[in-house]
Length: 375
Image (tube, rainbow, N blue to C red; front, top):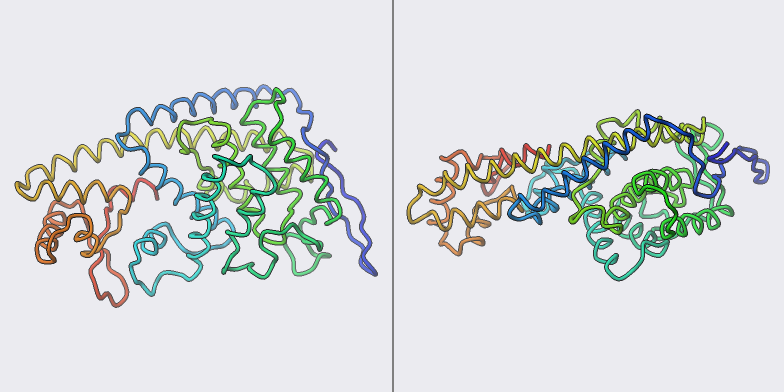
C-alpha cells in the first residue's frame, strides 16, 4: 500500500502486527471529486479571511474559536466538560457541577496559545511538538505516560491488550525515522496544495502515534499550527475539531481507512469537506456576531448616564461571556451597589441572563445570545 504496511513484531513470547507507515509524501490518485472539494475549501477560506475586515475586533473571535477548538478536541477523547464549563473555569466562577476534566481543556488552550507564540520564533518542529505534548498532559489524565517524550514502548488503540487492539501503530524503533520525515515534510517546499498537505500530515501523525497518550489532541493541534505557520489566514479562525466531533464515527473511519484500505483520497475528501463547511460556518457566525453587537449597542444606548459603563461591560462580554457582579466592578470601577444596578439593567434588556448553578454564593450571568453562536 502507498500508506504503509503491517509488519509482524516479536517481543519475547508476544507476536503481533504493527502498522509501519511509508514516508511522506504519498502519490495521490487522480480524483475529480478531490479537486472540486479543494477548490471549494480554498474559496470558503478566502471568504473567512475577509472576516478580519468586517469584525471590529477580530481578537475576541479568535479567542472564542480557540476555546471551542480546545473543548471539542478534548471531547473527541472522552472529556465531559463543556464549552460553558470552560468559560466558568476561566472566569474563576466556583461551581461544583464543573467536571474535574475541565483541566484537560484548559491545558489545551494553554498549549495552543504557547504554540502560537513559539511559532513566531521557532519552526514547526519535533521540538515544538514535544513541548506542546508536555503542556497538554501536565497534571491531568495521562500525566504518568511520559509527557513531552516520544514512546519507548509499544502502544495500541482500542482493546485492553495488544492482541485485542483495533489498531497497533508503528513500534518505537521505527518512530524517529518517520518523525524526521514528517518534520522535513512540514518544512519543505514541495508543490503540494497546503490543504492537501496538512490533511496528509494529520493522518500520518495519527498513523505513527508517537506518544503513549495524547496523540489525537496533538495531531489536531498540528492542523491549527500548520495553517497558522503557513499564513493561510490573517488570523487563526479555522478550527476543525467541532467538525470532527460532530462526525466522530466517520472521522475515525476515514483515518483508519488510510492504513486499513489505503483510502487516502477518501480521508482527504472528508478533511476538505470539514475545511469548507467550517470556514463557511465561521463566515456566517461572524456576520451574526456583527448584527448582535449592533443590536445590543443600540439597546444600551438608551441607558442615559449608564450607557458608557454598559458599553464597557458589553465589549468585555465578547471576551468573557459569563460574568458575576465582581466582573462588572472590575470592568467599570463602579461601587458594588451601582454595579449591581447596571447588572439588573442589562438583565432587563435581555442582554444578560441569570445562570443557575449549584449552591451559588454569587449570582452568575451569561451573554446567552452570543454564546449560543458558538455552541
